[in-house]
Image (cartoon, rainbow, N blue to C red):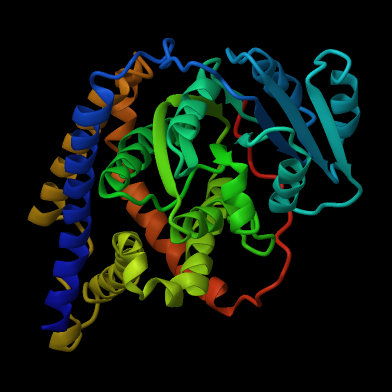
Length: 413
């Protein structure tokens, strides 16, 4: 009986969430995207206040020239650039100092030692000469019109504390790179649209987000002891009743891991970050004023439960193939049958919907369909295993431990 219950949950949870994401994303598209201006023609305002473009860097010598070149070409009337050299051991600091002669709007802050991304963002916020921050990573390429799109939300919405953009994968030379193109379009993009429809977003994208500095000041800026500062600041802003929006026209081209080791480390960090945030703030959410965060919390808790249930199903399904188990532990086996076919069909439909929506931002996204259809198995297994590994790490982590930089896998270039 218990085995049947576990199997039902392992099947119906991803099936239900997939349809919630699809319906939520379609609703968002029909209400907000379909008739919106095109990416190259952002909405106009009577005035555009000054923006501060923030780039925290750690060992970004291979990427920072290109990143700053894209920032300097932003189609925005008034902006400054602040680059934080966070204790880099390569030539990042030297390159940044050289680039101040090329870009007069650039200012550089040097840290003698590795202080972590959150501390770098804090320093940039304190040094900024504007109320609005646009934060990207040191290896990201910001689309020419992205600043206007992010700023439009921040200027027109007095309760908007942050706006998250639309990351797109640059490196697609390997199977892992191509699979992640599908992940960001059909899973991450759909989730953000669906969550925006319900009113609360799990996290802004750490690689591209705009912030209102007064909102950050009200919550004491980014936490320096959280392994994912973007999830943490998103929850605290929304718990303080600031709105977070999603702007798919604010594109940012990013590098992602293309080795299994690099992808594993990145996803364990993401999973650990979600667990750390839920551990720290869950007690603050059980009040009526925080009710709009409840769907986000429930979805996260169910995803953790699903990971452990799925592990149980797989392990005992395999064991049951070679030994006889008690009736309550028996599983029909780990290999897909009718329920696997239903899940795969749902995922293919989800991919098709996401590609129809994403053609607006990437005309040739359909070329990735062949690779994307292989993603569900990899995504579910990776999500399950990283959650199982990261959740205990987050629960046992001592609070107050500074989170510092670890140079990630930037893929095969």
